[in-house]
Length: 428
Ligand code: GAL
Image (cartoon, rainbow, N blue to C red; front, side):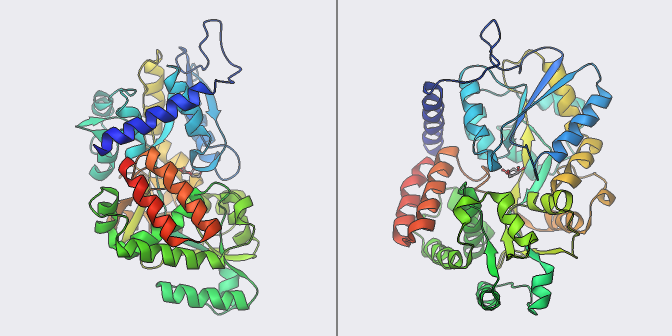
């Protein structure tokens, strides 16, 4: 039943978007708008553009072009963190039977309940066999990109959603210890505020930035098993622990920068880099941004710790690429997926992106201390799917949850918030 609601929501979204018409200037003589299906070309659709996002992809494209000089790559990236804009453009194109050759999609519900459920993706089991990939990814990861035994995409990375990055100098100057519990977090936050520093940087111009904080509090309060049950519909959003999470979230929001609603994730990370704010909870693409765009040294300029009370859990976000039905250049797309799924491809992309390789046999030496720690945690910790990044619930639910978070951030009404989540949960 939930599946049906989810599919209904996706189709409604797709119809709504296509009803708005398309502005794509690239329409060719046949009326085809993208270049997704053209032979000799591979169009890669993602939201990796600009600072903190695109370097890994460009490196991967370079590697592909070296190995495949006859195939042209079209980098069709649409700006906007977490795919805020790209997902809408993609929906229009998929609805109009004009898929890109391959596109960025999160493993989990975003792939499975949207594009696989709508019968828009080709299974890649043969490709996985031919490329000898079956045992190169952790089983749990293959499960996230599979439905009924069919595999639908190739994971390029594993990002983590529950690190907190912090400005080392501020912590040292104020003699502050890393907080591991919420009580400690609020003590630290008070000390920082007294010292004239914004305790927590937030950029929720796109509300997923705040949704990430809330999902980590949920993980802390419920623990990994019940967190998973919540998004499987086995625990209701009216559960006391969800309410408690909302209260803690509301309190945390008292400690963020005033201009949070006009900042995107890079702008919020910038506050920590500049020493205006002390801590940031975001995905570890922020680590890529600190290291590669802002030239900050891991464990010298910035440090990191696990979001309070979530030690032992790994909030998993995986970017994957698949083969949409109807593209004509299947061989070329598979060539690209082959590079993206190779050790070389993953080790070119991930050190720049801040993520770790999805493959189990990549070269640990390519990664700095942060990456190596994340790899160890990934092996030992309990993996839980992120809501904010499409893995835990359908796009229909996520859209409503993001709206509810946005209203909580502006109005602070916890009861309303719980009600809105509970109402939306039918669409999970
Ligand atoms: C996530 C994505 C990451 C990163 C981030 C910020 O959804 O998985 O790769 O791009 O958004 O845009």
